[in-house]
Length: 494
Image (cartoon, rainbow, N blue to C red):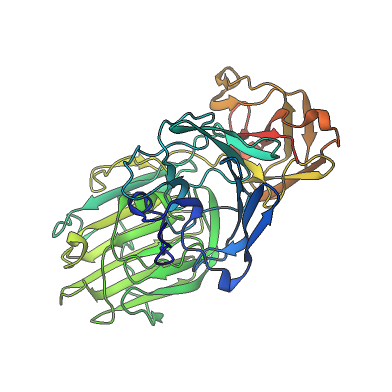
């Protein structure tokens, strides 16, 4: 069998998997960098071999990844992923193939088990921030010309299912093909309604000429850690510090991404961390123009002033103003969408991250309308490194907890009622766990933890229990001002 010719940096690729001269087994194939921390380990044991990536960082990201592949002498493959496993800025692939030009069977859903593929090649691709196997694992047993893939035998894990409520906020954007932009000379006011934005033409102070804080941005660069001077609320959280990109957008949470991508794409807007694009296009302040950030009394603003589109001498001026109440203004005094790269495409809009569904491009220059409707559901999952192992303590993490929460509980049950709670005034909410036991916990915003012991009873190995978090915050309004999380199913094991 030919030996691999390289490290196959930097994203998982189904085409490369199929064409590989050597058979490949991929736990979490992406750009990992053990030179920055963690370790990669190989252990040959009786009847099996273990390959373990222990807290290995993803390249250009502070997050680490722990996962393990077990190869058994009888051809069985086990994979386990710790709760910290993720693909934050890269495309990842989990799967295996004999290679040598194997036929592509199409991607599988390795979180929807059992599976009975009839091909030797099995894989799943994960866009950035979409890896859904963390805290779990599976066992693949050879079966004739295919495989039987089932949840890991005796493997303690936490699997997420369903969705929390209120309904997550919807992203919105307009994609402008090359050399088209119909809002030059205009401006829009986005008024925060608490569950979205009312969009109207801006009537006053739409472009503020009081900018002076020049940033040392050049082509494809990022100014990290710009302090607003206040907390700016947005759907899913709030931020007091942003990162400004030369290419016409900001990362709403400083440090959430190091990307300075010059090629606007709806998929990236939806899958990558929360981003607000004043007009995301390929700009080059090294060739002409300056980008400014100014924290002023009562607002903060980013101004791209007379910045050239890449490989042109066409100046573009636009401005983003952020206000403490969550309102913001976008203004485009002069903007020409004519960069010579990426077909000249440009995007205006907001993506909240977390692999959102694509609502499609919409006309942002239309009359008054509401966008971004929705709320911030609780999310529930295992804390990194924690699993329901017999005789240990399991710690679950509840995120997106609101600051005004007055009561919170973790419900545990042996059934999933899958019951819509519209009759309680919560039409977007589903009861995903029976309430056989309820554990109250102290609500801390934005992340709370709940810990409890797992009995050391071998008889419960492989046993299942459903969990769901609930919280009450009067500011949500309604007869029952509640948030619910997704469900998290515990599989007891070792």
